[in-house]
Amino acid sequence: MTNFSDSENDEPDPDALPDPIPDEWESWIKEYAWKLYAHARQFCPLQHDAEDLVQAVVAELWNSGADASTLELPFALSRIRHRAIDHLRSESSRSRRESDWHRENHHSEERGAEFPSDTEHDRQRVQAALDQLPLMFREVVSLKLWSDLTFDQIASLLEISRNTAASRYRLALEKLRPLLSPSE
Image 1: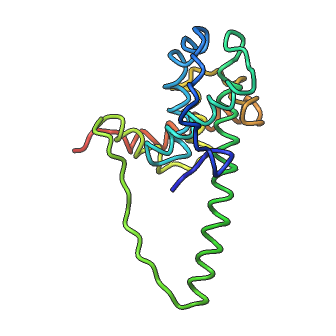
Image 2 (image 1 turned 180 degrees about the vertical axis):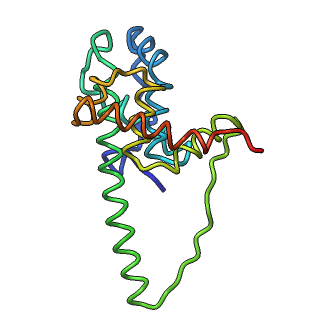
Image 3 (image 1 turned 90 degrees about the horizontal axis):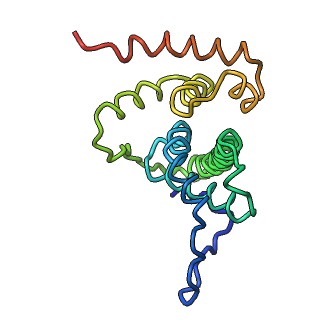
């Protein structure tokens, strides 16, 4: 189970009422939530994991006292990226430890494939094609197409040169073209 929260005991107080969401945060979330989600999907193959990641980052930004009226999308996208990478690293370490333990103790575990339950055929087709690309290409395509970032913004976010960002985007589109062409 994927858990993007910082604490294992995030149980809400049942008697406490949630703080009302300020109007500027509601507007910010309404405008950018889908872009954050599209970026999160590049790291999380399952829809609910991507949703959890976005929720955790938005809550982190809100709780930090960030001002939604001045909060820029690239900063929020970088928080998604950093939190996802941290999570992937810890999952990889955990998985390696479990695998070593199973191997040492001669246990085998069968794992079934999990598939997203989303029924949007076109979105699934595009996401399936993107999933076949290495992360460095997926990330640039997602940021360019779904978040409407410039190559300068992408370069800054990913800490690469503008030319590298543009090159990765061009190469990704070349790799996607045959994957998304209509079946014959």
